[in-house]
Amino acid sequence: MSTISESELLAQIPSQLFINGKWLDATAGKTVDVQDPATGAVIKTIADASPADGMKALDAAVAAQDAWAATAPRVRAEILRKAFERVIELKNEFALLMTLEMGKPLAESLGEVAYGAEFLRWFSEEAVRINGRYGINPEGTGRTIVTQMPVGPSYMITPWNFPLAMATRKIAPALAAGCTVVVKPATLTPLTTLFFAKILQEVGLPDGVVNVFTTTSTAAVSDPIILDQRLRKLSFTGSTGVGQSLMKLATENMLRTSMELGGNAPFVVFEDADLDKAVDGVMLAKFRNIGQACTAANRIIVHESVAEEFAARVTERVKAMKVGRGTEEGVTIGPLIDEKAVAKASELVADAVAKGATVATGGHAIAGAGTFYEPTVLTGVTPGANILTEEIFGPVLSITTFATEEEGIRIANDTEYGLIGYVFTEDLKRGQRLIEKLQTGMMGLNVGVISNASAPFGGVKMSGIGREGGAEGIHEYLSTKYTMTPNP
Ligand code: NAD
Image (cartoon, rainbow, N blue to C red; front, side, top):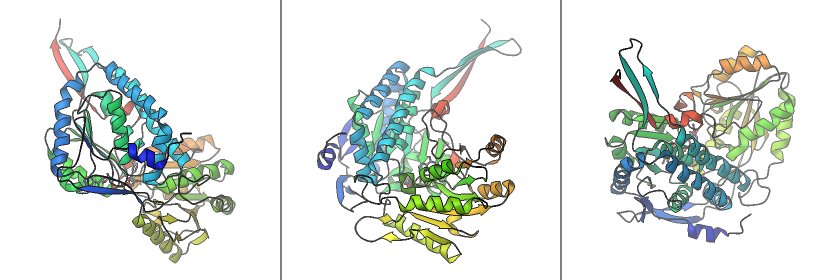
């Protein structure tokens, strides 16, 4: 474990905009404070980009595009590989930084460093496997050459909940494909992306290939970038509402878009489930990242014959969780990101209780410094409770029951979202049926965490469009082109 102190680490983190390989103040001289959600203390003050800065970042990406696209794939691969190695060497620094700006327990931050870094290694390996094809047309009158071209300058907007992984999951495939990028991390957690930009510079990424800014004038800075015809791709991770409005804007400019949006994951426990596995699975699927994940189990749907035992076992585990600042030894639940998140959890719990649910443990915001909410279990949640239709984004586990497989599937699919579903059953055929019947882009079968750089992450319905990771991930940044030639 690194012995670096918080103040030593924060002193190393850039506080300026990263544009065309230079660290710059915002043109209007504006700054914004970044806070530790566990204490409310300001940990860093950074540049707050103006619309002119945003345009400068796009100019730099556009200027660097042709040269970057013309580099040998092996060169791009090696830069990504070096970045992977450097992030892993600095894993304790990246982890501490994420815990400071976002709040998650240090052990989870280390997990995110491993996951986030893996996109750099995975796409370093994909960069050299971009293939086309050559064929004789059916009439025998010509030859077709199909190639894959980089889509061009790309704009990436990332959320605060996974500060490293949401950035590398977009930046790595774009760079591998030969695209240059402008990245706008969330204003609540920009430090990890700025630190990562510093690493990219250190490992030899040419100027202008990656540009990073954050801003509090979000739409004023973002909209002109999205509407600029030199931009060719928008990749967004965040809430469905913001994704919808950005997608409308992107249609003006006919941009390629990837939208990784909200979720309302069902976690279905059948009567034939291995309850040990299901309890372990739900603890991860619900409480990882303090419940603030798009993949978080939002609705725990348990067969009525095992619901009581399941709830009792989960409640015992939840009571043993330790709430505190993520840097403290043994803490499993850190703060929520801000006051709004605490208010949302409080409102959802109050509404569920008013509609008949029982609080088995927790159920309150924690007074004092920082934005903490007790890890909570609700049982007997009734249809109509808002907690069943809205993303909770907090450490609140809500249990409902079902009687038959058909009913379980119907309840699981009864949402506008379709990111992920979790299913616990020891019956192989039932598991196979659920793979086909759950309306989601991803499924965890007897596991509570599914994220992996080698797998295509993404949703259906209101959870979005496109896939990140896997062999599919690089195609989000490639455009297919064919050329017809005469017979030789
Ligand atoms: P958010 O939509 O509020 O913000 C996401 C990003 O968009 C931030 O960088 C924010 O500054 C920016 N933004 C907001 N309004 C904008 C505008 N008008 N123009 C340009 N940028 C704008 O979401 P959040 O609260 O940061 O993140 C939580 C949400 O993200 C949840 O809904 C969660 O499910 C979702 N999420 C999805 C995935 C996924 O892969 N599907 C992963 C993580 C988080």
